[in-house]
Length: 362
Image (cartoon, rainbow, N blue to C red; front, top):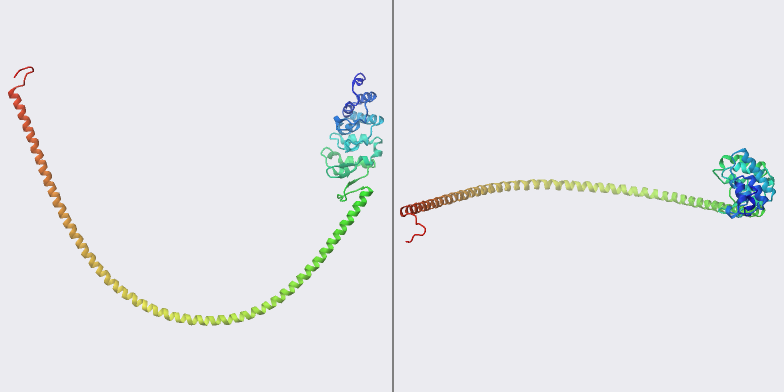
């Protein structure tokens, strides 16, 4: 390894790779040949070698755990700053808590060094830029969920408490989240002022709500009394109205009875008159039916007479037609016989006179 180290460029990220892969010998040679443990590598998002180890080292065996501790010791002894924050976001301790593979092992190895003495340093606080909330290393695993950290959450919290880490969780604004703790003095004053202001507003709202409730109660009482008075007046008016309605109903029923009696008499007269009219109409209808029957009979006889005349005429026409047809047949028969006679006569003449020869001269 001593052969390859001199050829490597200084601060090219080789020390970061050696640290994350737990290559103690390579890291030792690189430091001997001028690689700086605090160099922020852009290939590693601005982290230095110790930060890269804390974030990405994978520890599964006791030998790897021993190498991790030796590497951390090596980097610290050569000036690595555990409070250095890559891109001003997370210090070495916070990055160790974010390790996706071995958060408990790396954090424990880191805090076995003098790094525990600076656990409560301001530079170890993590400020979430999306929420403006600030977390100490103890509050970070407690309040920021992580799938990789969840199985070891209680052990990590116990480790941090044993190392004297203080819980700090607050917002940089006047409005603090539930459970805020460890606020800086200026923020505490600001939060107290905001709390006093919110309390005053709440008291004012409660007072206003109380006054509004009293006004509503008074208004409801006034409305209730007015409603009761109106109900009493309405009841009196209703009683009077019902009395007049009863009298009017009785008068109306008397008038209806008188009208029904008159209508009953009128209906009787109408029925009598209707029956008389219907009797006359039945007699007239009977006479009309008899007359119509006689007319129908006469019409029937007339039609039958005409039908007989027409039948006779039709028979006469048929007889004339048949006679004409017979005459035509007789004429045609005689014409046929005459034609046959002339044909026989021509045949006989030819037989008597002989057949003319071809080429003979008459």
